[in-house]
Length: 229
Image 1: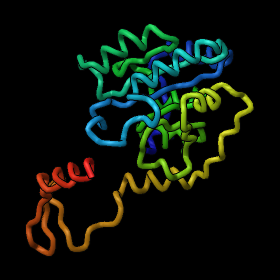
Image 2 (image 1 turned 90 degrees about the horizontal axis):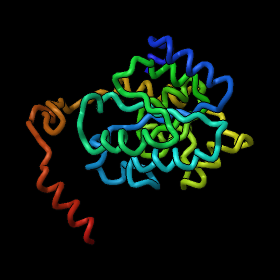
Image 3 (image 1 turned 180 degrees about the vertical axis):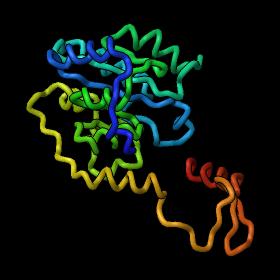
Image 4 (image 1 turned 135 degrees about the horizontal axis):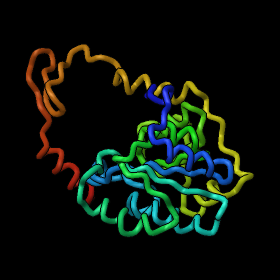
């Protein structure tokens, strides 16, 4: 969280290139997520796109009509060196569109990229709340633990998103710095310490000294009943 306070770009050529474009254009940077982080969780994907990839491509295609905007995308570090459908889509479709893709192995520092950008777009990434803490304009397109902290604009449609990104008269709400700090505190402490429960991993632990564990079969049955009720 506090890494945002120490910003560096390690690649001088990229730094000079970005700096030149900053003077001439509005810089919008997308920080994607690795789809395997949430695809198995109902309701945690983008609000009005099928997934991150489709959303990023739609944004890039729509922004072709705005030559005053430079669009970057920083690929999530979890996607480094992986041959999967998400990376293939990025390489075959997104890179061919109106966007400059910064690979996960690229030495450009993500926090400096935030600092040099006018608008940050995230789907679920914690980069969004970090950017808000640094005073940046943030757009959140998916579910995030900080979504109710008034740290980001949350559009309801692609058309509304385009207005937010392209209308120079659009006013981003002012973010109170204590709001992202609430998330930072929670992220460091994860709430209040247990008094009677001692966790032993994700799904089991001891309550008042008695071992208990989650019943995944019962959970799935309840979910199945909920879907079809």
